[in-house]
Image (cartoon, rainbow, N blue to C red; front, side, top):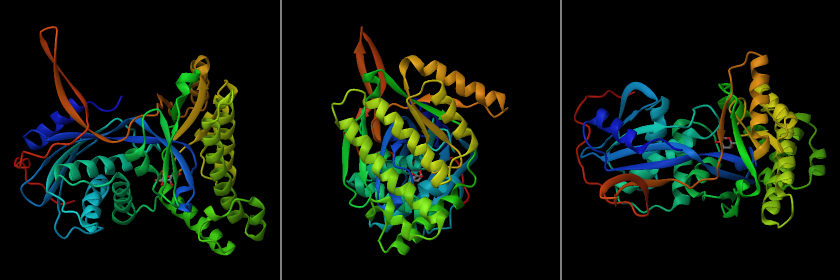
Amino acid sequence: MSPEPGEVRELFRSCFGGAADGVWLAPGRANLMGEHTDYNEGYVLPFALGQGIVAAAARRADRRLVLCSAQEPGGPADVALDGLAPGQVTGWAAYPAGVAWALAAAGYEVPGACIAIDSDLPAGAGLSSSAALECATALALTELAGLAVDRRELAAIARRAENHFVGVPSGIMDQSASLLARRGHALLLDCRSLETSQVPFDPGASGAGLLLINTRAGHELTAGEYGRRRAECEQAARLLGVPSLRYLTDVAELDRLTDPVLRRRARHVITDDQRVLDVVALLRSAAGDVYAGIGWLLTQAHRSLRDDFEISWPQADMAVDEALAAGALGARMIGGGFGGSVLALVRADAADQVRAAVANAFARRSWTAPEFGEAAPSASARRLGLQCVLVARRMQCGYVMRRHGSRARSPNCGTRFTASPR
Ligand code: GLA
């Protein structure tokens, strides 16, 4: 999976009339466990998806960032890098522009660049297309400039772009998953210390699989509701006299909260933190049926997100119930909530049954048909290189991962149009 690098190079050519210096891929993420725990300094356990965002990019001689996207037909966005400030760029271009702004704010010299974007991550599906866009841009800009930026720092910079330039008060999970995850692993991230560890995670080897169900229910409410949940968690921590909810492990301590809503919100965070550690313990154990245990925890997490954190939505609840009834080991909504996707853990021989049960349930209610995909723990963001090999006396070329980026060569890419700021 992941979008065709050849196509994004073509898009680059048609937008800018020249060749890109390179193509960078940043994956979306699914989160195995730990939802709304990141901004509470807790634990998360995401993994990178095979699906993602590709950015074909080249340096410009001037101080402008010019962007076009296969998914946004409204013409290129042209951003002046000097004097760039939050509020100046809106819409999808605010994410890459925000990355340029955050890199500069961190003291890096950001070059002018042309960037063409393509994606096979459905927007609004809760699979972190925004973080993937930030991370693809961050890698492209830093490698074009020959800057060596540690990936943890790059994740923090991409998050700052989202928080302070775009204005979404999200945590550090999505950017970390896109930049730090490893194929065949889930990434355990302690959002207080920012320590990470790679946890081997290969359900396929045990005859299980992860089914992604895009419920295709929009999440317009997310921004406001997300911020409200965050504020409620912070208020609960304040009332309990701790710097963040991460400092609590015993739900009995929540009896001190008189507000039942704050008590429920905090209970979700404390129990989800524990579920992350429980999943990690299962994955690291040599126990027999690890996946039955993980499935059970997934379903517990869904109930907590539905009843305590109150961020689930009817299509997600239905998809979880139908998947379980059709034999899934466990299922839950993932991401910020109020729309997006469900992740179901399913034995290979039950996958067709689960898909059919969910699709039928949606059809019975005349809901937009769900989309099914595979969630395979995949590699993190990287540069894709064009490599040619001689096979049976014919040259065959394909894109492969390159370990080291090369320096940009082409200085002129934005000569075909005069774009206006947006
Ligand atoms: C969104 C945010 C993340 C995280 C999740 C919920 O994806 O970007 O930081 O808070 O929601 O777990």
